[in-house]
Image (cartoon, rainbow, N blue to C red; front, side, top):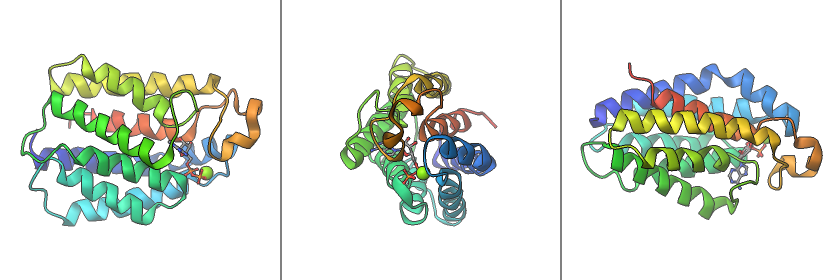
Length: 201
Ligand code: ADP
Ligand code: MG
């Protein structure tokens, strides 16, 4: 994939997140403070604007542009988390071709950036519970499109599985056992992001 192709996919990611605002609001109303949809919409709308205007010389550039816009505009815990995820993904992508190995490497650096920023781990009922299985799934693939599709499917399953977890971090923490039965809003966002990234055309 070329830098322009990556940019096109990330514009589609922005559109998918903007179209999901209500779903994310409802998910955060169930176990948080209800601001996840609005925050993500603010961030991804700014990211859309930035992607449309900034040049993409490497395959990492559009990821960085997206991440910086979210860090600046989204707000909340998720602004820092998803902003760090995308700027982290950009780090190993200094070349002009994205392949399966680069994609997996980028997901790993995105994970490292989120963990350095927020300190959460697997099982805490966060977006990490969609991201960690996505990385494991991508790692087995040698074709970029296959790696992206595998990551998306694993993220969706991971997000669904957060419904059985009890929140130990963030605003849902105070709910304890009552957070069970509801999917984590950030995990839903991560699965929407990877699904849109994996959609060809
Ligand atoms: P806030 O918690 O400030 O209201 P949002 O509602 O926008 O922010 O986002 C909440 C989501 O952010 C959670 O569902 C979770 O997936 C993610 N999140 C929060 N804290 C962390 C963390 N430390 N590590 C990873 N993800 C986190
Ligand atoms: Mg919230």
